[in-house]
Amino acid sequence: MENEFEYTQPKEAAPMPQQPPKKQTKRTGGAGIIALALCFSLIGGILGGGGVYWFMTQYVKDAEPAPNTTVPTVQQEKEDPKENTPAPPVTTPPGGTSTAAQIYTQNVNSTVGITTSVTTNFWGYQTTSAASGSGFIYNKDGYILTNHHVIENSNAITVSMYDGTTYDATVVGYDASNDIAVLKIEAENLIPVTIGDSEQLQVGDDVVAIGNPLGELTFSLTKGVVSAKDRRVTLSSGSTMNLIQTDCTINSGNSGGALFNIHGQVIGITNAKYSNNGNSSEASIESIGFAIPINHILSIVNSIIEKGYVEKPYIGLSVTDVGAEAQNYGLPKGAAVSSVSPDSPAEEAGLQQNDIITAVNGNAIESADDLVALVADANPNDVLELTVYRQGQTLQLTITVGEQVQDAVPQKNN
Image (cartoon, rainbow, N blue to C red):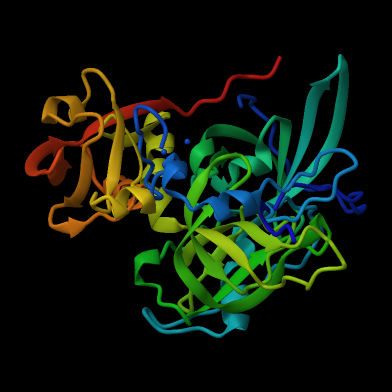
């Protein structure tokens, strides 16, 4: 049985319904053992593939199947906008909880549909198609958040509001490793979402998702609970992410949409689901969806908006797990150093190949993933105290976290 995690991939957009002309702005254009020179992302290190169990790497796939192939999917979404009537305003006491109906009313006008025109060259031919996904208004200045896979390789992007108004959008920047993209529209009187704290989530907490499943059932609400936190998922693209698992129904077209807590605050961005590849001979897999914790990507988003690039904590290590066989010979659990980048913080701290990092700031490190997640939560210039096993000796080394800058401004398509 092949079960796979997949992005909730873009859906081919259904024909747009005829509707009265709407205000539209003019598009301004633009558009991971763990990997060498370990650059830790804020979501727990997208490059942490070496610390991920083998079966996870077997089960996580991109959502877009190859020709003539059926693929189980954790999917990513895109949306096909439909005209709707504006929802009436609802007031909820600060810090109070809301019903699903109230959350919907409060946030449906902050939810958007995203339609893209994708042009790719294949064997010398050009193929153009429309695809759909979801997103939400990040702030009143017109910045929209969605998944990178929703807008990847697109030539034109249209953002559609709940009331049917459409806007051409420009790609401000993205971080593909974290599956985040920031768009910009020129519009007035926008209603942004309220950002919550994903670290406060508990397993069993109620959550609500609003998005555009199948690119046709636009502005749909689904309700569920947090099934697990920090679920380590490796997608077929090679990206490994620590995600919120939820039984909220997530389908193609939902990708990029918001996951809300009971206060109506965004605590995640839906981006993947788990399926059995459509194999009817196997038991059906339902209600296993995933979302990117909002806390993991906020600094990336703000860096893209304010600086035009992505800043990530960096120490310059390649690490992997210590295998069970090695442990049988007396080696401790931890993150084993495969290589050290020249002139990196790790080299300056005195780390060497074959060292095993067993603790950081007193916190036990039992796998490469543990190290990835810990460093990912660090900030540049933070000082980390490492406990290191080296050839039968235990050493204490100090490392200062560095910073690696990544261009977030995409190249324009020709």
